[in-house]
Length: 108
Image (cartoon, rainbow, N blue to C red):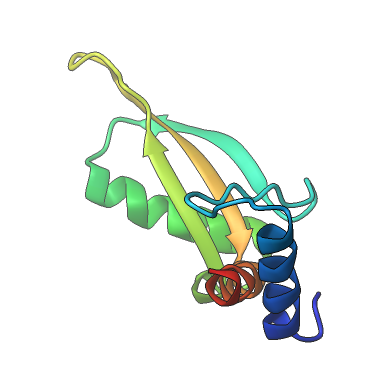
């Protein structure tokens, strides 16, 4: 973890400026051990119920409070007659996300 995201963001901004690289979009590639990506499948439920179930699953699998996690949920298209619901889930530690956002905010 970075000791000072503000210093890292300032350094990053200087490097971008030095090399003439404009910042329009940011793509972050965290270490694989930081994030968990999984396909969730269960009996057909509404999107609201899906979000609640996934939050519970994220908390259960990670062993930490869901409030300290960042969850992205992408429901997968299924035929209306399908008896299953599928979603792609990304679970990422909120503390890591906060540091990344701080570095990017300062470097902008």
